[in-house]
Image (cartoon, rainbow, N blue to C red; front, side, top):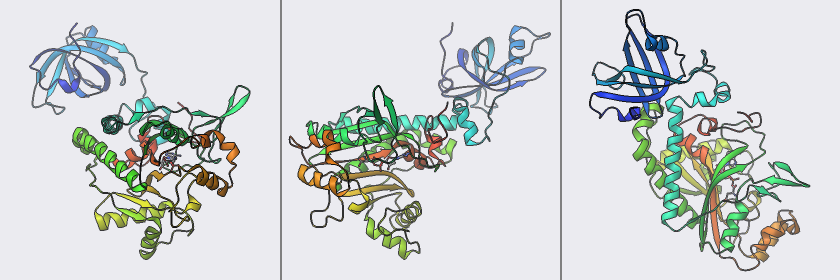
Length: 436
Ligand code: AMO
């Protein structure tokens, strides 16, 4: 049997015998000649077979092929400039039907996103949709490489927890033998534990769970969280510097490997963001959007989505940048573990990273002094006794530290100009989406 060649590897080969395998995308069953378009994970190629008088096994098999069927084909490669699809075709001499498809495909290119997600595996046969996950692979790999080359340790923290990892809100509970477990909302506690363990610098790319009932384009109940945490920082500036550097490494890799394909299949021109990303204190950002005609609804609250869009518009116009760090959030709207300004405890050493109008990340310097931390726990109306395991990490020595958490699907959605994280999540999970 001839060894299978990926369709993308056919072009440089000389004319002659080849084997290709994939699924049938188009059947043109004509009287004199039969054409198929075969697609595999790397591309598509035209298959051709002149129809013999009175038909034979192969022509009968081709006539019976339903779109979607997986086949393996042996044949003769022929370069021919007249063939629109890649300037080559394979003349079929042998055909093996490996996996038969039902005759009607349940989705079409213009099906609704909900219908497409019902049959996600078919939706992912669309090369534009599959490309998103090759971009994701390259992006994650570049982040991981950047960290590994700088001595970071990759950790895997448990997703089953005895206590909430962020807040009591948006918490999934699961029966756990005689008791109750909580699904991790983030690896927050355990990435800080790694600092107490003396690991110095760590990262994790793993699922996080939020029982968030919202149906927006950027919320899921399960998402992949990209987290990093580093010791020996002087403030959140050190975290932002690392954050933007690792992101730039991710963009560089994606642009180099997929820039052309992304342009061709998704119609998006990718560029590598310049460093440093603009930084604007949250209070100033609210003033800026107010000066430009939009008042964020609650003065004491976070930026709302409209405010995020407006500040991104400003940053794009003013600095030609897609990213902006909004810094120094008020303590009242930040978790207890964020370190507060030495001279103004109403503000925190923290930031959100906004990319093209949407928050993709939260980061901060953490409060590492146990007495201050315990006070901040109480200040938020929480009970230190309920957090005994977490607080113990701080009792036996802890370096200064900080880090960030970033939603992977949000980054990809904004980078690739997709309308929702449903498109950039392999299998989306939301309030009314638990299957397939
Ligand atoms: P935060 O709660 O802001 O911070 O989450 C960090 C990032 O995770 C992503 N994200 C989500 N993505 C999809 N669906 C959701 N429901 C969802 N919730 C959050 C967002 C968000 O910016 N422990 C802190 C991070 C830290 O300080 O290190 C945390 O979890 O992109």
